[in-house]
Length: 216
Ligand SMILES: Cc1ncc(CO)c(N)n1
Image 1 (tube, rainbow, N blue to C red):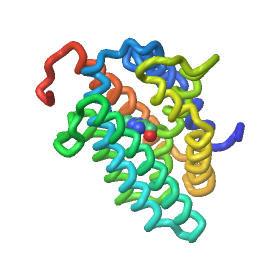
Image 2 (cartoon, rainbow, N blue to C red; image 1 turned 120 degrees about the vertical axis):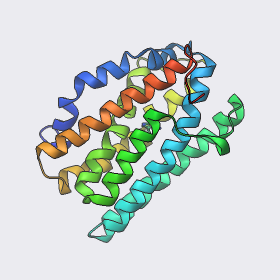
Image 3 (cartoon, rainbow, N blue to C red; image 1 turned 180 degrees about the vertical axis):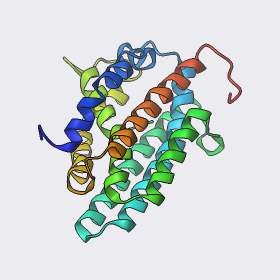
């Protein structure tokens, strides 16, 4: 919806969305040239991230004032479980052991923020913290799938996030913002903080390709 709070929050963060789209990590996925080392690190970190993300959805489910919203968050957590299955497949293909992942700095900062928000806020604020993750990836997926999904080693990533399923889940979460979040400075800064975490998540994975970081 054009004038909705969720749409306004997204529009305010257009510049950050563009920064993510043109980030060398994302462009490397777009044209298939992203170094394996970088993608392998990302897959491991993302599996850790997604587990926290699913837990945050479940906390939101428990806090939901009505059953319909409970079911929605439960379904969203189910969507993350499917995404994690995809990561299991990637991990097997890319030689990453998901059982022994330790979170890097940017990963931990993002998951700590999400879980702290989930435990201490209402579902409107929780949705404001969690929507950038969905809307940004839907945006990136759809951009990278235009005019068509390229065929290379990262096609599956683009297919997942450009899918109608992912767009639908994103819109459902945005509706929670529109129904339950207050249009405040806090909602805006929460949304923006998550966008910054997203950018740094790509940056950390990108640096993996060139620098030997302590997390390695
Ligand atoms: C860090 C991050 N943000 C968003 C998504 C999309 O679910 C993801 N898999 N990982």
